Each structure stands twice: as C-alpha cells, then as structure tokens.
Length: 491
Image 1 (cartoon, rainbow, N blue to C red):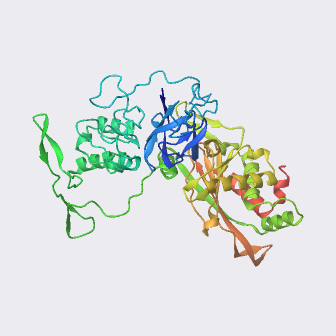
Image 2: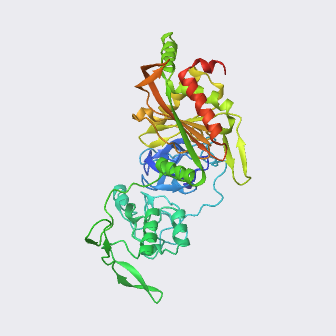
Image 3: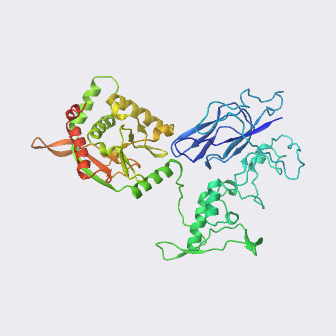
C-alpha cells in the first residue's frame, strides 16, 4: 500500500523565510528517486535547486511557477511504494525512502517520517474507502493552494490534462490563499478574504490583493469586478452584490476615470529586487550617512596594471587593484570596517575584511562577498572576483556568498558615469564608489597635461567616525591610485 509523504519547502538558510517557485523539474505522475532535484526556487539571495528526500511517485504539486511560498509550506507529495505505472509489473520502492536521505538543507532533516500525516478521503466516501482508480490519497490543508495536478472528487475520473485545467471552487470551504502569511495579514487588518477577488492563478489570493484592499479601504475605493460577490446581511452571506464603478480622480488630469484602476505596469518587489529595496530603505532609515569625494589621477595605476599583465600569468583586474588598495586603507582606518549595535549602543570593529562588490545582473543588483579579502594578493582577488561575477550572472550564487560583508566596493564607472553618492549596504559602515576613468586635463608636475582621471566617493556612517577619519581614508586611497608605490609601504 502506498504511503504518501509530504515534502515541505526547507529552510534555505541565512534567515530566509520564503522563496519563489521558478521552474518545476517534475510533473505529477513522475517517478522520482531519493535526492532527485524536483524544483528550482529563487530566494532573496540566490537561485536554489531543491532535492526531494523521498523516492516514489509524485502525486501532487503545490504552487504554480511564479508563486511565493513560505518556508514550511508543502511543495509536493510523494507516494512511496505506489505502482510505478501500467505494464512495469513492479512498484516504486527506494530502499532509503522510508528513512529519507542524508542530503539535507538547513533546518530540513529526513531521519524519520513526519510525526503526523492525515489523509483526507473524498467527500461522501465511507471511512477507509479506497481512493478512486488511478489516484493516490493526498493531504489537503485549509488555507493552502490547491495541489497542482492533484485529483479532486469532481475530477478524479478525468484525464490528467483535464484535471490540471479544472479550476477549484471556493464554495463554503477555505478561501484559496497563497500563504499563511497572507492569511495572517488579512486577519490582523480585519480584511474578509471571502470578499476579495484573487489575482493569482485560478483566483488565488496574493499578498498584493490584500494590500490593495487595505489601500482601497483607506481611500474609500474598491477594486472593480464583474464577478458577483457575497455581501453579509444580518451575519448571513445570502445576498448577492456586485462591485460598483467607483469614480476616481486621475492625478494630474482634469477629467475623471470611472471604474478603472491606475494604469501602468506593476512590477512586484520580491526576490532579489525586493531584498535590495528592503535593505536600501533600511539603510536610509537607520544610518546617518555622509559622503565625501575626490578626483584622482589614475594614470600610473593603469600603467602599473599593464606592466603586471605584460609579464604573463593570470591577468590582474582593475577591480582587484582597487580592492587591494581598500584593504590597505582599512588597515589604517579600521573604524570604517565596523558595524553599529544600537541595542547595546556599541560600535563593533571587525578584525577581518569581507569585501562586497556590487554586480549588476539580469535578476537585479547583487553584492557577492570576497571572504578574507585582506589576506589575498591581487592575483587571488582577481580570481575570486571572476568566479563570483560569473556565478552572479548565471544565478548560482549561494546565500553564504551574498552575506557577511563588512565593506563594499562599488565600481559604477562601468555604467559610464563619473560620480555617485552610494547608499551604504546595511549593516556595514561604509562604501567606496569608483567612477569611470577617462582622459581629462590635469596639472601634472606643474604643467597642464591630459591624464587618466577618476572620481572616488566614500559614503560612511557618521556614527562610527567623523569627517577627519573618512577624509583620511579617502585621501589614502587617492594617493595609492595616483602613486601605486605608496601601497608597497603597507605590504
């Protein structure tokens, strides 16, 4: 007899609480082996391929591609020991499936089956009655999305492709909500989920739907809909009503638009972009930052790089040379390699330099971290920058490679701009920005000449140091850029 095991979205580490389903790697009805990759998810830190700890037949998937799922929500169910399919004469049974696998993610162990597994029989069926032919019993949980491809009592006799196209009906049962977090948001704000029209797949209620309802309640507007909804009368939901067209004034216009929501493309702030937005907002709220900048003659630095690369061997990148200068400057001005603990009202000066660098990717801005940058030479820094940059472009950075930075180097010159006032990467205390290096008129050795000039900017947390320290750091960096031999005195 098949035993149905539920596989939940595991804890992916680094305090992550949710992930977005990017791509399913298996279909309902597929046979999976222990530790086979079943789904690709995107967290706020990286893309992760998730292995299933059970071997058997996939009986249900929870969540469509593009759906955000909280950690602990079910991803799929697997029938262990279920028939493998017509004609094979055997059963799917992995010797390790009963005890799970040892290949675990953070907070997700499979040493024993779940303590409780409840199977829900079809409505109207007698206790202990077998499931309809061709289906396996699956667990359903109120408040969670309908399992993708799972057979319901109304669709058990349909072909699989027909079942997958059948839309669930709310009726008097639980309202389909994308996650418990959304249900809690609605409950805490007094939003009746039964009165909302979900914008997700098959009417699934998303967080955006609840937030829209909250904004509409605050402004006295409603989301127009042609679908009748139930309105409470004396506590009963037996009177049918429709949303009315609500006149709303168009900002900046002289006319009135009736029954329409604001026009434009809505881009959800989630995944990497959402995390960046949260961190930048927090930085602006919590860090009293200031910025100083200086122009520097980078001609000799560029000549030194060409000379280093002319002798053969691995190429040294400009970013690696700037990183080497940063670590030397931080050794002289350790106040900028620190963080602020406001609970203890202490400045924590850090012993090691874990250097973050901003990398623009198709998924948004990410900041990979070079561990122990202070202990690496220019060649080692170049190699690590190259490895992390490639991982950023392919979306294979791990959460550990995106966290734990103590200072950030931002080369925005690659975008063709001269200067910027960087926003500090919370909870760090400073960020060095580097503009493009271009020929400019410059007074060199008392004469006007064309030199390779770069603008350097330093944003710093004014709580950790005053302008004198920040200026000293930036001036030392500029001196090393102008005369790389200055750096030799610190090696």
